[in-house]
Length: 233
Image 1 (tube, rainbow, N blue to C red):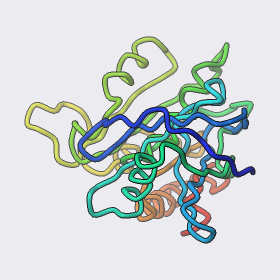
Image 2: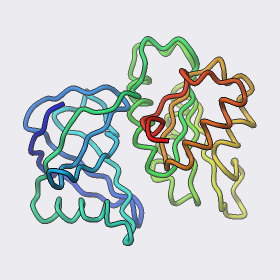
Image 3: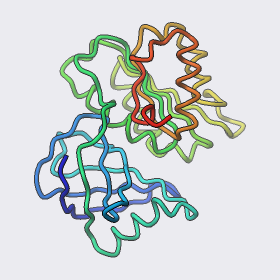
């Protein structure tokens, strides 16, 4: 892990409350798909964000920051980036990165901007010369507009035979034909053999806790469930 000053290249609104941030590092600091960085706001104030890009894009990297107006944790980070045009970061961090070689089917589960964690893993896997195992991404959100890479993921699913995209909405419009409800319930409804897969999950701690308990009860070995939140719940 190393602390460096990164330059803010882009802050782009993806939704009303989610922003795509591109940072330029002063040097190439390698990281594994699924790792994260910490924005250093103070000596004892370090705020983690998943890295959404892959190491092939270095020295630039991408973050997806959910910054609802009442979420000071994230909005303060964006405010500092806009004001100063640079930010102190520490990286790489995290022990829930993609395990290689991939020997079991991959199931990626994201809630909200937890998608950034799964996006890094998905891109890295699909970029390999061969994809020996299928990969399925379940992305849960309240409504369709929250799925800010929806069309991009649909195109990837058309391009790669090994990739399946499963969006899940809690409050869908009347013309929605996809899965509805809670994202982990959609996984349980479609995936009969969890014990045969490696599962990577990111989202609110409450969501990750529910997934851990429900999936282990269905026979998933805990060693095959990956996510940095698991260390805190």
